[in-house]
Amino acid sequence: MDRRAYLGLVGMTSLAGCAKIAKLVGPASRAADDAVDDSAEPDTPTPEPEFSNGVEDISTEDLSDQLEDAFPIYSIDSRETVDAYGYLSWSVDIQSEVDPDRDTVSLEYQVTVRNGPAIDVYLMEQREFEHYRNGDNFLYKEPYSAENTKYADASGLLDVQNYVFLLDHSSAGVAGPKLADSQDADVTVEFTIE
Image 1: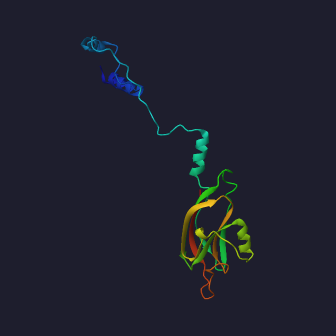
Image 2: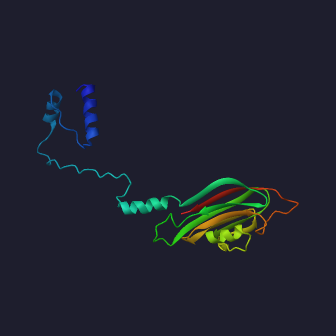
Image 3: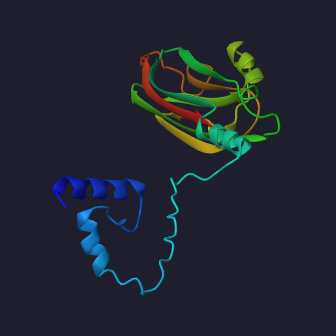
């Protein structure tokens, strides 16, 4: 058998996934046939290999649930400046983004003042933000808020409703700017709701 015939045979059997090499047809195969003892055990079929791509078969409903869990409902990852006597806020509309049967979402955030004075970090319901903007007393989610701080982080479960995430550097909170020290606060914000 010449090299070309041998490589062709090896290539065909590799591609076909065969475990045994088929008998050759031609002069080279006759010599091999004479040496084979046909009285040996009968040929047993080679079982087909089982292949797995590592992905389970799942229903489209399960896939939808997995995709919903894979992407955050709301996410912030930025560097911001909170002006002295000002604030930054993000309206977090959860109710329109989740399944109506869902009761809670997962919150995780981290705020770091990189340069400047301490600030207040508040998570509040949407309606409380209106009180804040009007200069009235306002309620906030205490476990997910921090006052007069240069670093804040929190995680936990929230009821499904609409919130405002607020970085305050005004006189409305505890860490308002002092007249002698009225500089802006440069902050990094990482905030995720899933």
